[in-house]
Image (cartoon, rainbow, N blue to C red; front, side, top):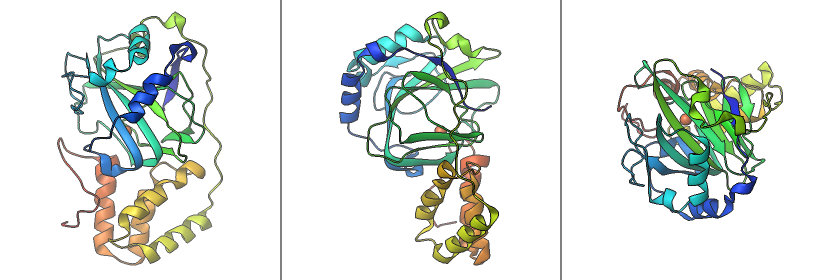
Length: 290
Ligand SMILES: [Fe+2]
């Protein structure tokens, strides 16, 4: 399902500035999926199964407890309690991405198909240089908007600038049927929101694609592989291209120079990030013991 806006919270009178400043001051901890991000990418656990801020693992649980980070953010706590039902909520993270990129991927691909995982984002501040993308297009999340993001389809995020981009990421879990309106305490207090949001991108014609693949094949080897993945991942934010085209191009570039190692590596990266991965399977972009 395409990502879409499902509500808009009035955040102007929430006084979030102090909380955002605090969250920006917290030192980033190493995380499982760090290597799929570039720049300053930070996820802070505000609510989770244990109430322990260092617990970053997403899991099925009947508890969703505030962590020490949440207790330092009274306005965010108030916003959450006022607008969201906590019953099916499993985790809330504060997410910051500055001068960086999260490469195209799918989440939850390794989890149980009978359960519906429902992920929403709430943009806490304005940032004109930050974008999200999925298989349907590229968009910007504006302050207060509540976005459903289908993490089960390919998606990516970027912030081309140096300013803070703090979001809340709320993960809900439902067994059986549910309506997305179920997540809100009182839908009637939500504001009107926009229904069209895709940004227009520059065309990218076939000859440009051929040139790019050919140029990539000239610099592509195991020493540049990771940088090339990040560089080519950015193209779809600017040009009208499918979100995960970067992986196909790298495979084509490696095929052009007949580099078997890179072909294998690029195919395994694409498989891990957007096709299929097993429970607890880990992958390292720069592990060449393949
Ligand atoms: Fe994701």
